[in-house]
Length: 468
Image (cartoon, rainbow, N blue to C red; front, top):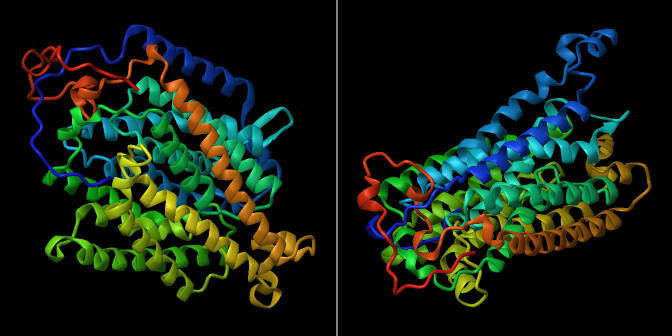
């Protein structure tokens, strides 16, 4: 998800010593964890497939427990969230600890908070939220959206700001998901709309509100070096390998899950090939750009998030993936600079190119494929993919229009939420890093082999600082 910039040496001199985790904010975080624990104690209970008494009372065979069908997919999704997203963002030469560490922090917080929020919307009955392996998968999906937004403001915010962002975004994610999936009957198993489009545009609007006109002071740290790009490629490989599980994890067991994994598989291969071809075409002297390979190769997974469980066909998956890889590569090459210079959106990781544009493209692809759905194409399987069509309550055209409306609803939730989040994150007591100290690990971490007395000198008085 990284935006290109030239690699340059990064001196650590000029950093000001500042306590990154003041006692007051550490206490606030502990209070937040205490409040979450109380909410869990009051509301959260095991569901019927997890509770010992309920499961055995119904006399089920252990082999029928959903755990055995869903947990392998959960493992893959969990790995994507913590390893894939975390390492994909370590391309910044001086921000590797923060990229992986804050990914760990935000995801862990989002998993707890989204269990409550999504539980109230989707699995609240009898006065309690009932959780099982499927709620774990859904919480990971929500964490994914939060991490996409994190990519847009990577390096320019402190941990307190990030936790506040997650607190707000998880609520809006749950609300948007409920409106689309439960009220509008939209199909979006792999989250082209609910995860990628929402997370990307929430983060982009947030970045616009937090715009820093003096960010050039930290430009020397915004680039990558050889080893940081290599570590980021680890994140790419993990995401690429497990993306079929990501898209298929929540789908109906059987042909639906099988079809989703297959369509995602082919789409990813096509986006990878188009990325390599186009990167060499637009690169200097026909050379490949690692930024394109790290990111645009993954766009095939994003673009079929909505339509992968539908009868997209293997050919359709290849075409979608090729188009997504092309759009994403061109976005990194040409659109990212315009986004910053003209629209004042400082998109650190280029989430607009990997998640935003492919997410919107995926939503539109879902509109097309839903509009072409027929009983002849799906047979008895129509009920599992489009239950309202199978029951005669909605036509294919009506389903397509609902899919399109779902995209607009998502963009509204993301834009309004990002604007509100940006205003909250500008509160002065949140203590964001000043312009000259962005993209720097030493502000928040003990960095081995670097002495604070040498590395953290006073800022130059002649350079006024601004904060987000």
